[in-house]
Amino acid sequence: MLCFSLRREMACWMWTLLLCVLLVVSGAMAAAPRKPVDVPFGRNYAPTWAFDHIKYYNGGSEIQLYLDKYTGTGFQSKGSYLFGHFCMQIKMVAGDSAGTVTAFYLSSQNSEHDEIDFEFLGNRTGQPYIVQTNVFTGGKGDREQRHYLWFDPTSAYHSYCILWNLYQIVFFVDDVPIRLFKNSKDLGVRYPFDQPMKVYSSLWNADDWATRGGLEKTDWSKAPFVASYKGFHIDGCEASVEAKFCVSQGKRWWDQKDFQDLDGFQYRRLRWVHTKYTIYNYCTDRVRYSTISPECKRNRDI
Image (cartoon, rainbow, N blue to C red):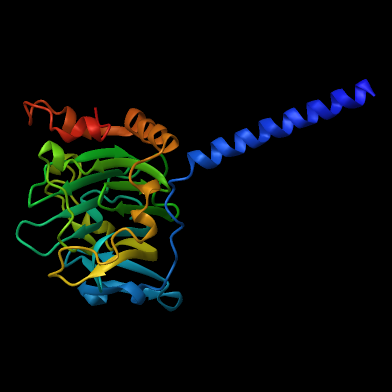
C-alpha cells in the first residue's frame, strides 16, 4: 500500500510539473501574432510599374519580380490601412546580387509621410544578405538598423512581417522579432497613428549606396535578377486616405492587450538578434548623433 501511495504521489507531482511547464510555455507564446493567411497576389495587391517585369505562377499564388539594366518593378496594396498585421514570404535574389534592393514596406501618401521599412541589401556571391529597417514619422527617418540574417534568404521562402498598432511596431523574421519601435509620444517622439499607409514591395537597383556604401556595383552580366514572393497576407484596418483613425480601434486581435508589448520570450529573441547579428544601430552611432534618441532605451536598442 505504501509503495502504491508513493507511486501515486510521484505521478501526481510529475503531472503537476508538466502542467506548470505547459503554462509557462503557453504564457511565453501568448503574444505571438496570428498565423498569416496565404492568398493570391490579386486579392490584396496590384502592379505599379513595369508590369512586364512581374511573372505570375500557380494561378497568381506566387509571383516573381525581375530587375534588368532597363528597369526594376514593384507592386502596392489595393487598400490603405491604419494599423494591422502585414506579412510576405520572399525568396531573395540569389547569387551575385550586389547593388540590388528588395523592399517590403508601408508608406503614407503625404509630404510629412510615415513609413515602416524592410529593405534587403544584396551582396557578392557567398557573402551574407543584410536586412535594413527604418521608421519614418512625420517625414523624419534616420533611424536605420542593419542586421545579418541567420539563414540564407535565397535558398527558400522566409516570412517577413510587420505588426503595427497604437502601441508598438514590431518587425518579425520567421516569427522572431528583430526590431521594436514603441509609441513614445510621451517622450516627444512622433509615432505613426493617423495617416493611412499602403503596403509596397519592389526590386530595384541601388548600387550607389546599397552594398558596402556603393563600393560594390551591380554586375549587369548577371541580370535578370529575380525575387520570388508568395503569401500576400494583409489583416489591417482599411481606411480612406483622408481617415484619421481606425473605426474598429480596440476590436481587432492586434489591438488587444497581448499585443501592446512583447512578452518575455520575444524580448529574449530580440536580444539574441541584437547581440549576435547587429551591424549598425543608429542608437549607438555617436558620429552621426551626439545624443541618444529618447526612444532608444524604451525600444531596447541600447
